[in-house]
Amino acid sequence: MDRYTSLRSFVLVADCGSFAAAAHKENVTPVVMGRRLDALERHLGVKLMHRSTRGLSLTDLGEQYLERARGLLRDFDEVDASISHDRNSVRGHLVVSAPAAFGRRHIGPHAPAFQARYPDLQLSFNFTDSVVDLVRHGYDMGIRIGEVTDPNYVAVKLYPNRRVVCGAPYYFDRQGVPRVLEDLTRHNCLAFNLQGGQQRGWTFLRDGKQVAIRVSGNLDCNDGELLFDWVKQGLGIGWRSTWEIQAELKRGELVTVLDEYALPAYDIQAVYPQQRYLPAKVRFFIDYLKGIYNAPGYWETR
Image (spheres, rainbow, N blue to C red):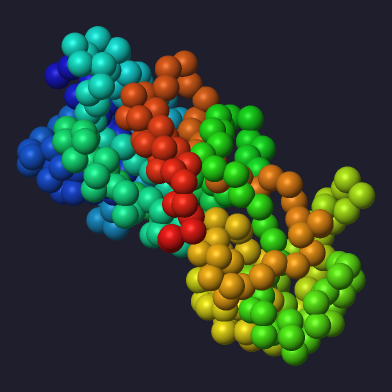
């Protein structure tokens, strides 16, 4: 058995969590997948997985080997792409993570056209508001909104974005317009909450320094889209990204306040792990999204 098949089989079993699921993807039997793992462990002289009636789990050495194996498989894909006779062709499997609401509105709808352009490419998406470890969980790339500080990732700006305080005009007609950050204490601030009901503070820039303001209101939630609906209903004010409110601003359904305190950059970014060669599938998808997001009027109609 060749080393590529060994690595691919091991990674598939680890990702799928069972021999049966991995075998289904490979179009072989679970017994074959088990034999491949046995052969790999014999070759290495170590145990990569614990097997029991409750399922499979990686050993400590298996965890280490999995990360390296994924990297080697990416290298195989890059080598194939580099010698392709058609420089615009791309194949393989692209796995992408993105924030839930953003993914549903601004990635998922564009996926079919991208896949039609590259029919040999399989696409998988995970839309979640949890920040995932791209390498550990096997993602080729992710979409992040805001600053990316991890030195192990490369960040590519797709579109500029800011976080601003906004509300319905009739809310401000009733409650007045906040002029300074301290005025927020007199307003019904609809904030995202964490486990246990704790609220995240809202972050601003004042005198060149970031400041976090603790806000409060009579409604909070861990669902950003529901919070946005409440803001549009005039139930309070929210701290939202400019990407999600452009259409409402254009129609006059929302207005922004305290703009002079908004963080200057909270950009929409594509991120991927540091690597020697950027796979064509990642590069093409980044360029594809960048072209869509920078088309005139795109954000005002979404």
